[in-house]
Image (cartoon, rainbow over all chains, first blue to last red; front, side, top):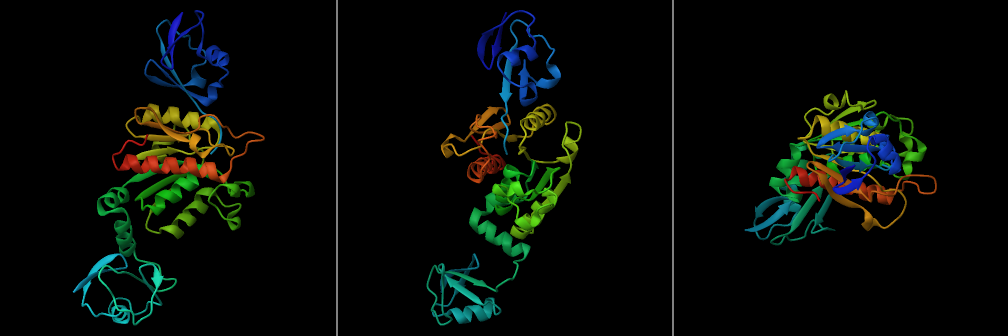
Length: 66
Length: 269
């Protein structure tokens, strides 16, 4: 299955969830903001959501410190 | 007649006027007389273009006088825009305290500052608090420090946790919003909630400013419409790589300047 990740084509197995994708990318869901098909999501609340063919996903990642 | 500046306001005077005469007419109680940056004697004869500052030690200028000084420094148009703007700052730690001070110094109209924390000894390595403020709520200590810099900035504080439910209420009416948290999950929470609830209001956030890597790796980037991200995007605060005053204040400086540029209609990135 193909989808767009941060503007680049990305391949993954059907049924991949946001949670499993973030785990694959070694990102912690509570530290990222997602934009899925132009809708901003709190990643932590959408771990179970499955990605679909053609989805456009942007990931904004935060590191600690301030 | 010659033109001079007296406490930043222009004035026309007779060509033979001496400093002592000017003092008698304009500021009889002054005990410091400065001409063109240097202390001057009362019998100094004023020249065209001289910049005269007359000060009474310990006297706090009125709102009007400070306004005139700010206008002279920032040009009237810029000052007019800044002084009627309201900026929200979420977090009063290393970023938030530095950002608030920069914005108070430029004469921002109003700041809304939110934080749940108290000043701890470990904060003093980078946050704009003083050793005698340990144990005070950060929002109270910061308000006190800001009022010592510019008592005419309106400051609203909220002591408590910010969440998606109270965000809009706490920061009602802000022209620009600033994310200045320390914890990455709080940064993500605020950013998601703001972009969902107030997409029309610009947000300036920060990620990556720990340690003592090059200053030049900290940048201001436009991430998407109305969302600017400052930092090196990499260097997290972690054991062996602490948060230190220089890079935290560089990131805070980027954030404050991004706010200023947004208020003045310029693209920050």
